[in-house]
Image (cartoon, rainbow, N blue to C red; front, side, top):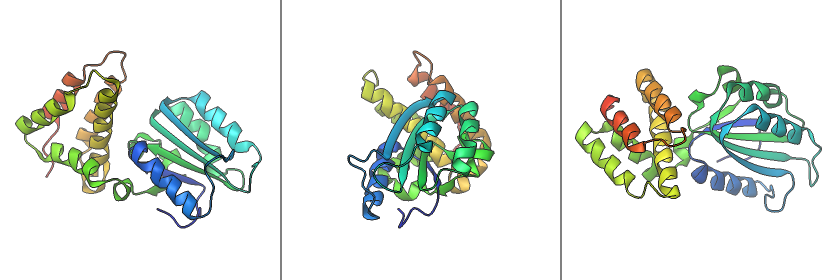
Length: 221
């Protein structure tokens, strides 16, 4: 993924389950120790708030213990505006030797001021073909076939792992719309973001949410 830590803050759109192992592998290749390293930290948030941002800033401000570099990998399905504003300065002017990797479903969910401080990494180049093609197949299909895809996804959705799979699928659709030529589909991307917001309710109906996407999203070819 990279040959050296030349940037202080990286932005990656994609699934943390896929990306984090590859990040760790890349860090090991350049000689950065991750296992048992107090200067290496991985965080995961459903929605990252301002309190989490402040804790991150405090941790980044501490002196490195085991070497000259500190690395923070932060994944978040959502991040509040307040949290993003709190990170602006530390992402622009971090302590010497401090590097951040921010993993989100799509860089489009970030404020322009924060996004401008990140070196964007092409997530589709990192993801496996199965992950990216599933969302693209859905977007390229007519409504009847989309509904069949949803039926397959809904099997086992009552299980915790099933819910995570459905949330991941929504993330993949967003990433696919936001990537490359699909960036022009602004209305469709806005609809996906709206549905993802409802998916964070206490007891969301994934069946209704996904069927809504199947019906309203335009066929993208």
